[in-house]
Structures are given as structure tokens and as C-alpha cells.
Amino acid sequence: MDILTAISVDEIRRRGSIRDGDVTRLRAAYEGAATITVEDAEGLFAVHAATPIQDPAWTALFIEMITDFIVDQAAPAGYVVAENARWLIGQVSTFGRVETSTEMTLLVNVIERARWTAPSLAAFTLDQIRHAIVSGTGPLRAGRDTPAGTIAPAEVDLTARIIRAFGGETSVAITRIEAEALLAINRAIAPGGSSPAWSVLLVRTLGSGVLSALGHSVAPRRDIIESLSSPEDSAGIIAMLMGARDPRAELPARHAPQPGGCQVWRSARILSAEERALTRLERQRLEIVTNEVIEETDDTWLMGRLAESRPGDENEATLLAFVVREASRLTPELEQFVACRAIAA
Image 1 (cartoon, one colour):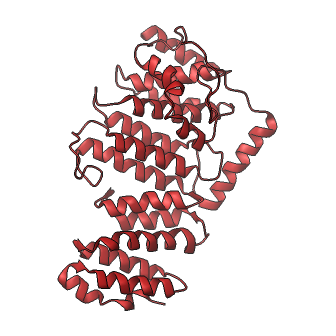
Image 2 (cartoon, rainbow, N blue to C red):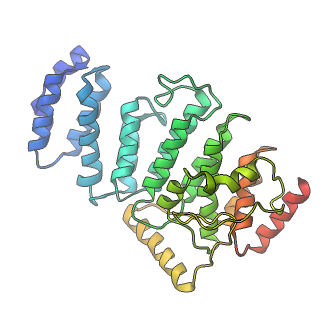
Image 3 (cartoon, rainbow, N blue to C red):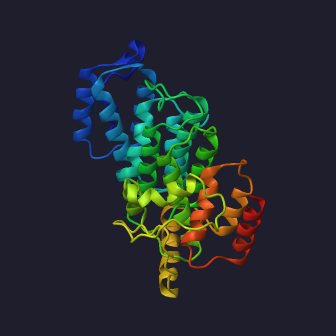
């Protein structure tokens, strides 16, 4: 059923507005339809783009219908595969940029609703945060007096939502494409424009990803994100951030693991061979489902990216220190890299 027959699309485009009556008729057609076709979905995006004046009820209905289409009706149901992620990105963006808060909310809603999405969709959504920091403009900065080069608390919270939701029902640690997006955000922040909340989020998520690639057991994403709000859990990272430049410097006082699986300043457990095999199988399964390669944030990646760090980047220095202090074992290459960084400091 073509749900757009319930409204006069041509009239709506001519007047440049969508009214409450249009929304009411469209919702009735949507609720009575068995499916939403790709033509329906593309038509809805066209209506959205053609109507700068929109009834407040339009936003919720638009997000609901497109999310239903891309998550629940486009095959495979419950997942957003690479092809569908590319389609959605093409619909919501112009030259890689999302222009409206409705489309930004839609992206996050899709990631939160789906059991799993292609990693590229999460990375694209995270990149909108980087753009807001660089330009100081865009839907994330609308109505906010936040200068370029700084990250707003709401943007830290949004990053955490995306990282948590993207993990879905799996135990897969942060992927390389997500990690690249997080580092890009960090490098977009001007000196002095960071915040403790951002530092802890960056260090905990990327650090856990590297530890996982090194064969350690790490907490699920959901537990990591939930633990970030605990001052006690974040104390060790903040202490390093405030002055520990050498990853081998004396540690802050150890404390017991916190709820949610955090083990700051306690050695992370090495996975058994069976556990490592299960982790690989889970990653391979998701690659098959989403049709997109899922790369780890391993030590080689970490060393290559940190070698490009701007001088004095405390967040990235703390990331390395976190990995060194949490790991039960390091590769010889990472040991050498840490030693060279300590000498250089």
C-alpha cells in the first residue's frame, strides 16, 4: 500500500508546510498499512525536505515510520546491513553532513532500535559530533552557546548513547571504525576544550577495545557506559589525566571492581582459548549479518594512531597509560612503544 496517497504531496510541496491534518491522515494510513515500501520511505524524506514549516507531530511520526522501515521491514528484520546503512546515510545527509535535528534524532533512534547495525552507520553518526565541534554549527549546536573547538556535555552524552546502543545484544568491543571516529572527535577538540567526562569516555571505551584485542576479558559496552557516571570508577583516570605523563608512573591506590564490571587499576583477566574462539565467532557472525568487515582496535592500530598524536594530548597519553596499567600482558612491540614514549616524555 502506498501510504503517501493519504496526503496531497504536491499541495504540501507548493505551500512548503505539513499541517496537523496531513499528519493525522498519514498516521492513519501508516497504522493501516501492512508494509512501508522503499518508495514510501523516499517519498517521506522528500516531503520532509520540502517543508520548512512542520506541525510538531510530524517529527515523531517521521522518525517512527522511517525507523520501522529500516529496522523492522528492510531485510534482515532487526538489523541494519551495510547496503541499508548506505541508503539511510544518503537520505539524511548532504555531502556527509546531517542538516536537521530530526534527521540526527532519526539516526540515533535507528541505532538504538536495531539489534545490530553496520559499523559504518555508528561511525557516520559519531562524525556529526566531530563536525559540530569543528564548525560550532549544525543541528547539535542549534540553540546552544557552545563555541567551536569545545565538546558540550550533551555531545558527550550522545556519544555514549551511540557507543552503548551500537553494541546491541553482543559482547563485541568497540570496532576500529568507531574508534577512528572517537579519535577524530578528540582531535577536533581544541586544547582546553575537553572535559573530564569526555576524557573518561574516550579512555574507557578505546582502552577496553584494545584490551579485548590483546586477549583480555572486558566489560560489555552497556556496563562500561553505565559505570562512567560513578565518580569512584572514574577517579583513577582523572588522576592520571591531571598529571601522570609516564605510563609506568606510580599507580593511584587500587580499589575493588565497581558494579558494571569496571576494574580500574586491576589487571584484566586473560581469556581462555575457548573464550577467544567464541569472541571471534561472534564477530564473524555479525560480519555475515551486516555484510561489513568488523576490525579490532589492536595494539598495532593503537601505536600507529598514537604516533600521530599532537604534542601534549593528555587524553591520548592517558589512553596508553590505561592500557598498560590494566593489561596482564602486552605484546613486545607495545612494550617497546611504551618505553620509547616514556623516554621521550
